[in-house]
Length: 178
Ligand code: AMP
Image (cartoon, rainbow, N blue to C red; front, side, top):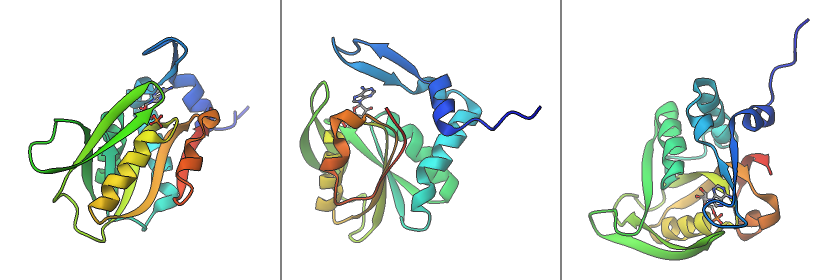
């Protein structure tokens, strides 16, 4: 008897780990590192997260750190380049800087001022969309740099935190609502 192929949601349920009270009490941390570590899992999330954006972007931006895994793989697969959006103090040259809030704290993101030519269409990738603070910050930085946002792709979307509402002007694609 042939069994039905595993759906992306089934694959994510099988491979991802939920860590209660990490990094602080009350947070249910969605750990995708076992998906990254699985050959089929990694290929599948990368292929499926970029699929709706085919032909609409010139470069892919990854958010430190887990977004780098997706963005680098997706950039390689699509023959585009990758932009690193990093936490404060990591980039060596002149940066644009943006402060943001997230589910369990606040932070600062930075982008090199000259990494993007004005008008470049950028697809933003990250692992989890929670409150939308981090991706919102990346959008601001890229827009300050003169980029056009082609869209936002994430693997998991924490529906009840409403991140998508903050990004209403943009096309957001997630592989699984949790
Ligand atoms: P936010 O800015 O609230 O949308 O948070 C998204 C960022 O924080 C992403 O870079 C995620 O990697 C991380 N993050 C926030 N909440 C979680 C969570 N519950 N599980 C895993 N990662 C999370």
